[in-house]
Image (cartoon, rainbow, N blue to C red; front, side):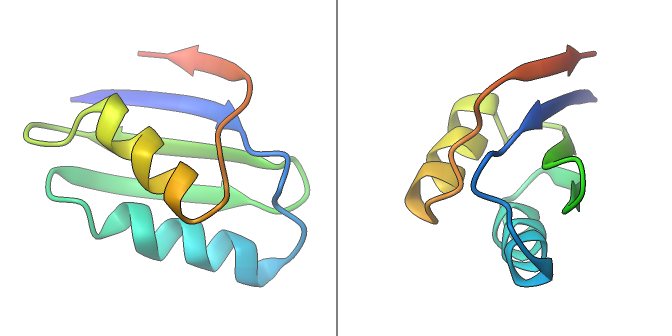
Length: 73
């Protein structure tokens, strides 16, 4: 399993976090998504067939592009 924590500056409310969690969570292979309104941080964990490129593409598509990568494991 791979996981990343990153900043999404566009997060401004609970609806934002819900949208990110639902849309990214719908990707095949994504095992968990946690978005936090206060810190504007998102943590995603995934296995194949999900990839970081696919996750980034979904975030771009829904207008919540990731900015700073905080942690990769």
